[in-house]
Length: 88
Image 1 (tube, helix red, strand yellow):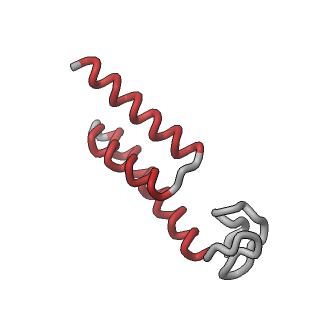
Image 2: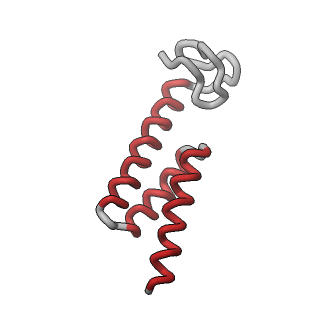
């Protein structure tokens, strides 16, 4: 069971459905895990020097979960892409 609803942040949201927003917690929890996995793939792609793949992963992560941390990560990748384009 999750401690907070990934959708609205309610504490102790319930077992299957959030008592505050009515979200299905299993579905939201899966989306959060998927977004975290994609964010790790962005970092792996950057580590390998594959900026194009990192950009592709950025599109996916923003479809899944738009948090400030995810936006910061995507912003960093876009900044790197701009820097790379200037050098060419």
